[in-house]
Length: 156
Ligand SMILES: CC(C)(COP(=O)(O)OP(=O)(O)OC[C@H]1O[C@@H](n2cnc3c(N)ncnc32)[C@H](O)[C@@H]1OP(=O)(O)O)[C@@H](O)C(=O)NCCC(=O)NCCS
Image (cartoon, rainbow, N blue to C red; front, top):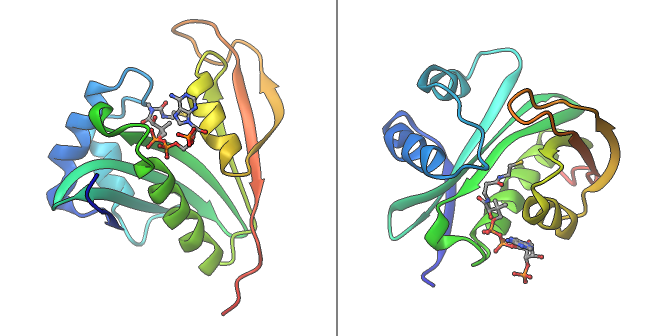
């Protein structure tokens, strides 16, 4: 696979990001306004939004909200044909580096209990399960698994 480049999400990426989200059942399906709001650099909480691209084509994205020293991973998705090729790892690693540079020391996320591939992915990136929210997802009634990773101190 060609090299994966990770960079901040821009307005011009929104069509591609929406198309990827719509094509993946396991990804959260936010309205366009939520992605636009994630690009607001003065919003509270602040959001970090990144895209992964290959040969200038957007193939994935991630968004985290942060109130330092804590952050929440709100969404991450890689276009299906590019999954399991380490693009998600490149994206998540870049996000974690960005959060460390902003003095975040803990990141949490919630994931459907049925989404074992994502839980394995997060475990491979040092997330551990620490809680469960019973019947959290109204569409299926399934539990949310809450995972957390502790981040190293910034070396700046
Ligand atoms: C979860 C997701 C972001 C992972 O991105 P990815 O680029 O496919 O993952 P990577 O190739 O970087 O995988 C890294 C490691 O994570 C684990 N992993 C990733 N996908 C996996 C799968 N389908 N099954 C089991 N383990 C998996 C493996 O340990 C893998 O390492 P390996 O391939 O050497 O075994 C991506 O598969 C995706 O977009 N899934 C659908 C959307 C989703 O579920 N988002 C999370 C909602 S909470």
